[in-house]
Image 1: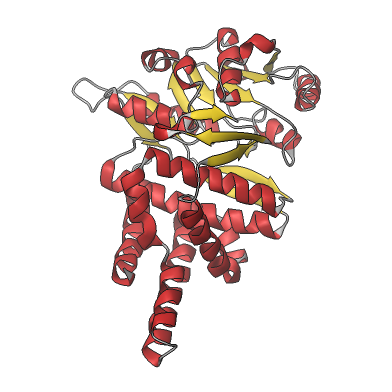
Image 2: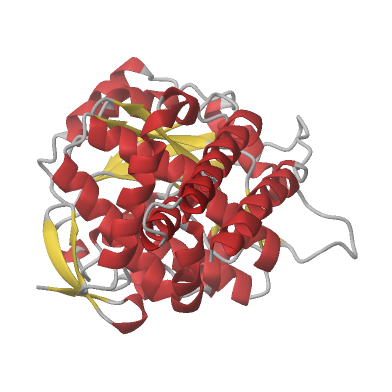
Length: 379
């Protein structure tokens, strides 16, 4: 298995290079009208600054509608949106306040998105989680793959999604999560893209036309799905559309996260991936090089060859993570917290094992049971 880890490490570099070489060409005249949907629930770390980043886009203000919605009319995040409306009067910012009938399934985020959809003015939708922060050129680069293709070109682009990196970690648990995102989760997605094509999506950003959403059954088809983002990307690919992993890397703002919340969220992610891609997830055991190296060291009874093997694995792991972050994802957390990466990897291995030990998850303070195929059941 250690040999497989070495091969996988080389595969990560190859996959990242392949992803970086497929940047779509932006054309100044291609600026389609866009509606950005931001479902909110509670106030995330640095929430107002995150929202502001979507108001400072290098994109014509009359071509962007920004919709916010919370299922609780008294949600404190909506006060921040009202402040946003006053600070950026030139931007088309609206608040949707659905009533209790909008809760039509256990996935409240999808219920929130469905409640916003009737207010969306434009055909091209951009779904973005509330804790994301973007750069001014985000939208121009995001929509570039939707530019009309010449006759005889590949399948039309039906969905674009963005990789992300942990940002502003202000506690040890947040640092460990940022390391897991930047050195494990996103590189594995790039490997999947290189080997199988893109048949997934991330909640960081999902851009798709209304017509594609309708073809996939609309938000209504996702009310009881845990992995709503994955289902949209997978559904678009199965419907014959090209799904693009954008060259735009957005920031997932973490803040001063507590260990319990970090663990429950990452365990939810792990069980989500396990339910959606069971075979691939089982095979991902080979990616846990640090844990495998330690097990080999223990099995060798701390012999010299065991130490040499573990040292080699450690150097490969640190070197590849640094290279990917520096050259491709521009993730500052890897270099800044490199010495904590082995701890992050061991935590990731514990989460991998824990994902097989039960089917309960906690999501925004609510408890659910994960059923076969990724369906949610409220407890």
